[in-house]
Image (cartoon, rainbow, N blue to C red; front, side):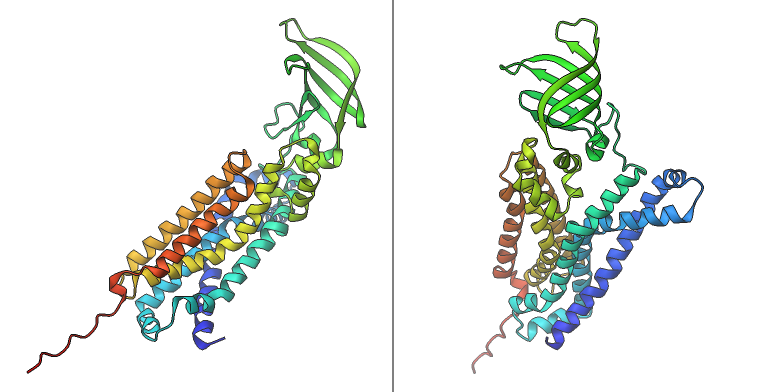
Length: 369
């Protein structure tokens, strides 16, 4: 590694650590201000230990969300400092190509990307799963019919609504079943206080039945219901995709989401895990491309605003495409990789089409005579 590469990587890593640490500290402090009372109440008298535990469990998810932003800001601050000290002028004047400069900072970018992959695919899901198991603050999975995070499944011709807490634990309570006929028309609605069984044979306990004719509900006691349910898969389906590890996502896709949900949702998230690992590196490369395009004579404010605007435009585009892929409006691979492809094209254009101010003016020929 050359002296220039070591210098640039050291500047990037130091600023990345400071920016990421500051962002995480601020966001975590705001989170604790909102949830600390609930955390302390759940610990039954203890004060410090539950707050520290909550902070440690929240740390991976917060860090994963803020890491690409920190990489972008670290790259911008590094370039701003180089520009203020006129070091960018020295770099360009020595004939260093933009490709060589990108390769020089690649170790820092790969370091940021590796950290992002480790957080997204292991640390953050584990932390979220522990928080839901703890059931503190907003991380609760209710077992009541008022649960807004319920799991909706289609089993044969019937539609099931299972509270997320019940789906996660496998203790099926407060299950609602909408039974339909062969034409897909609603026949009746069943509310089972408890559901026991395995495979495709289930016994519904303490059942309340509503019919489509508007009559008063009737109590049926217990009744049999036929439908294929996989409790192991149901626990995975109860969580959001961001709460699943890479291996769990692959398992759901391989098993066709146990026939209960659209596989496109999990395929989109699987592709997005790969994309998110590349985002920090792309933020560093984008900042360098903008600095090269603007040239050494560009103002610091223009460099800062341009890099920040394009970086956040990529984040917005990426999240929008992800949302469209989750609901099936875009193919999973396209929803995940389209923003990266567009960003790559933009970087290439910036590197090939420089502003005139970047090129040094040729000396005029002395007048003859």
